[in-house]
Length: 360
Image 1 (cartoon, rainbow, N blue to C red):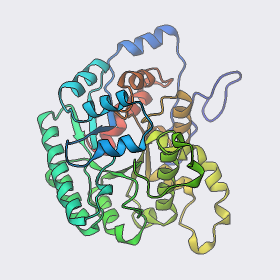
Image 2: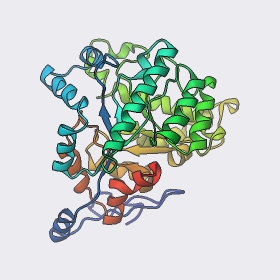
Image 3: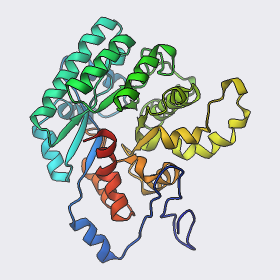
Image 4: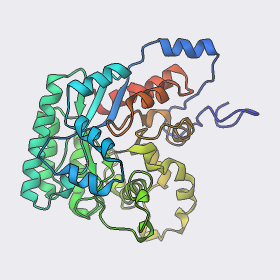
C-alpha cells in the first residue's frame, strides 16, 4: 500500500512526494530475498574520509574531541592515511565499487589565515585528483574550499571541478564560527549552482561554540547527538535565509539520514505560519528539503530510519554512504542489501542516485 499501513504490517512503502518518484518497498519470500543477495549490485559510497599526514593536525583534534578508546582511534588514523592497500581491500571484501573520497574532519575550517587556507585547499585537491586518476573506476572526490576567503573559494571551486574533475564540495559545518547563509558566501552558492555541483555539509569535530546543555556529558557533543543538532541547524539557516530562493538549483547533501531533518518536516511546516512575514521564504521548509537537499545514510544503519527518510524526501534523493573508516563497511553494506525495497529502488539508493547527482 502506498502512503499507508497494511493491517498488521510495518510501513514498507513510501508515500508519494511532490516532485519525486514514489518508492514501493517489498517484503518478498525467502527465495526472493536470497535471489536478490546473489545478484551483484553496484554500490557507490559517498561519504568516505581520507587524510594527508602532516597537512592538518587531525589526530590531536580527534583525540581531544572524541571520547573513543585509543585502539579504535589508531585504527582510524591508519585507514585515513591509506588510499590503496587497506581501502581497496576493504572495498573488494564488501562489494563496494566506488568510494567518493572527502578530506576528513577537522579540515580547512580550523585554519585561521586565509592565505594558508587557500594553499592547503590547492594541496588537498591536487592530492585527491591524483588519487582518483590512479584508480578512476574505484574513486571519485569532493573538493575542499578555503571559505575563509570566499573570492578565492570561488576560484578554487572552479578549478577543482573544471580542471581536476572533482564532483562537488564537502565542508565541515562552520567557517571559524561563520555559517554559509551569511552574505559573503553568496558568490560561492552562485558558482555551485552555475557548475551544477552539490555541497556536502558535514559536521565539524571542533564546534563553533560550546552548548551548556552538553556540560558534563561529552557523549552528547559528538556524533551521537551534537553534530546532528548543529549541522541540521546550519542546513535550516540555509533554508530560512533564502539561499535556495536566490539559487534554486543549488543543493546540499546531509549525512546521517539528513541530520534527522526529514523526520522533522511536518513540525517545521506546522510552525511556519508563526514566522514573521519579513522573515519568510517562498515555500514551506519541506519544499526545500524535497528539492534542494539530498540525504545520505552515513552512520545510520536502521531500516526504520531509511524508510522514514524515503517517505519524507523521495527515493530519488537518498544516497548510500558508509562513513569509512569511522563505520564498518561490512555492517553498512549488509544494511543496504537487506533493506526492504524493490530492486529498482534499492539500486537507486545503492548507486543510481549518486551517479546521477554527481555525474559519475
